Length: 64
Image (cartoon, rainbow, N blue to C red; front, side, top):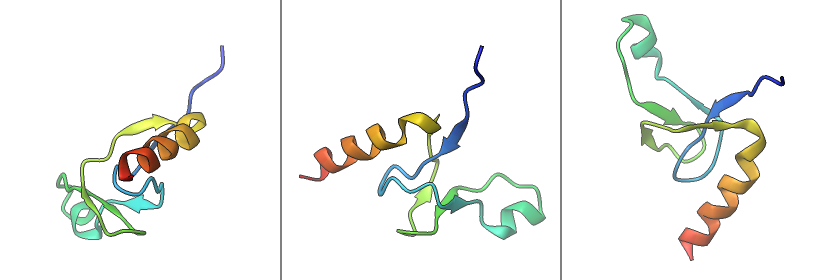
C-alpha cells in the first residue's frame, strides 16, 4: 500500500509556500497558517500532494 503525502495549501491562491509565523513556534502556541505568496492568514486545509493541480483548477473556476 502506498503512503499518501499531505500538504497544507492556501485556500485563496493555491500555494503550498506557507508557514506558521515564527512567534507561534517560539511559544508553542497555535497560530494561523500564513501564505508567503498572497499573505493570507487562517486555517489551511491539508490535501494529498497528488491533488494540488485539481485544487488549483477549482480555485481558478471560482475566481471567474
